[in-house]
Length: 256
Image (cartoon, rainbow, N blue to C red; front, top):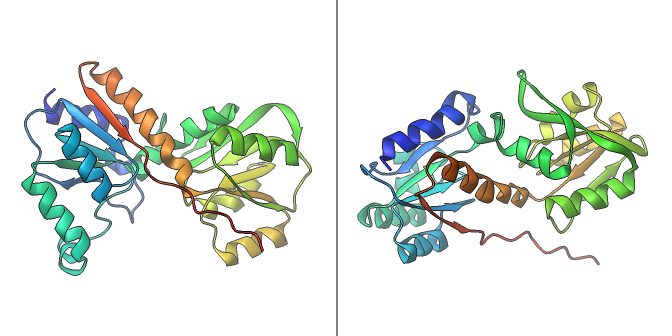
């Protein structure tokens, strides 16, 4: 497939204007080749992904998290590991492209896929809070039962629960990755529990004082990007050969 045609179709689904102001999406390593037939999908781009890309002889790697998160020249000057990998990738003719918060915020993006995985219905997105999704369970659940079910469905090994809200769960808010800052909006919009990750201490204290339920889950829940994006690519062109690599693991939980 023509590379620019593929990028155009993907950018129509997940346009850059949906990305957060701080974000860096798009072409990480290039320039774009004229054609792409083999694509590797991963959550991040690192040495392991580079080796797999070379092994599978792909022309393009598409990741969720940006390989270069900031100004390119500054990163390449001050981060020798990334600079080395960047040079190797360019010399190998690899294209590396990232769909990050534009994928998170878009309809049929990260947070819609996570909502679907939880089995939520009547899912609503909010233009003022583009990543936030709130939906209903088909039946009200006890809080502890819901949390166990959510961890299982989202395929994460643990969660950190702040249980200061209602004991009955019907309406659920979710933002994949580091979206804990949306907790106030989720509360105001009626969520009985809010799910996200990477919550800082001060926000956790605010949630406790506000009396809410919050489930903090590992950032790696975003691995749903890999299989979801594979489906998206094959809908665009079934002739594409898609490889996937999920090599990231959540930290171990050590209890004293």
